[in-house]
Amino acid sequence: PIYCAKKTKTHKDELGICRVLLAELEAHQDAWPFLTPVNHRAVPGYRKVIKKPMDFSTIKEKLTSNQYLNLETFIIDVNLVFDNCERFNEDDSEIGRAGHRMRRFFDKRWTELLQ
Ligand SMILES: Cn1cc(C(=O)NCCCNC(=O)c2ccc(F)cc2)ccc1=O
Image (cartoon, rainbow, N blue to C red):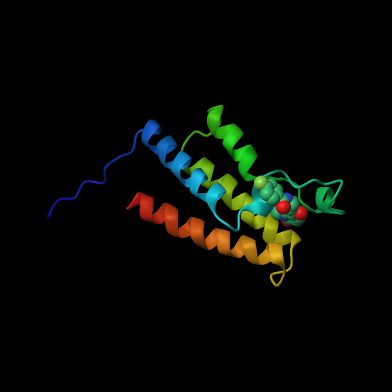
């Protein structure tokens, strides 16, 4: 079409996309390191190194208690999960590789959903 207006998304539309994206992240086979908060008593050094812990269950709680203003604030928290993972884990480790795979999956899915 000659004129293609960018369809603005309402807050409800954006939150719907967040719910779909989060469900897909949680269902992914490589999600297991990210489903619950890292147990800093079981993982030495984690609390000192990672200033802003984040995980999918915390994101779900924030989503259901309407703490995300929009899709962007949701994407910031999801990226925090993957950035924390990269900071704390070797790229060539079980959890490090899972983090890279999950980030690639997320980046692909939210761009697809926004097209
Ligand atoms: C992101 N990150 C995670 C860990 C970590 O050790 N995370 C716990 C893994 C054990 N948790 C599971 O295996 C599990 C949890 C829930 C579930 F539904 C199924 C399996 C360590 C460093 C780090 O940076």
